[in-house]
Image 1: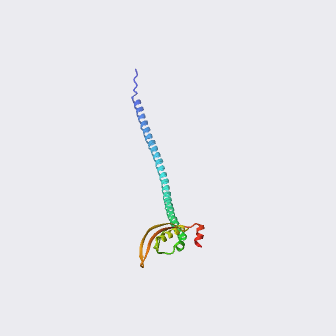
Image 2: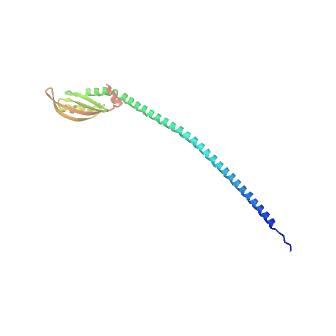
Image 3: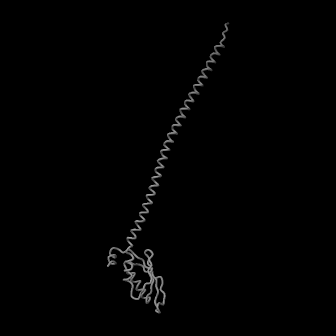
Length: 190
């Protein structure tokens, strides 16, 4: 029987397999590192691209915030101008109001009624004065109620008073001023 020693051949194959395993392991590690580097590069570039987009959005948001603040400022200016316009229009509409009020009072005050004060707060006018009798105060209120420019006369109080040794009725009443219509305005002007 012939004896063949196959051990060196087996050892050689083991060494070769071991070397192939090491080479394959190194290749797998290098390939894994390359893949990891490639994925890392992709992720970093995606993050940088997103940060660039975010920076663009941030600058646009700042620009829009500045425009919004400018629009708000313009709206405030518009509101202030509208308020001024309304004040001017109300002054324009009410500039002849005192003249109309005096004309209406002169036309509607009966004999025996004397005014000592006229106070106006907006459309409300307070009249205070003296009358020879309570019926003259009633007559004044009826006349004021028929006026196209004055409305809702309301008596606040009537009391007896002595002025220059004469017995008179001291009164105070409120009336409201209205804006006359076009027809009534023509009558008031006449």
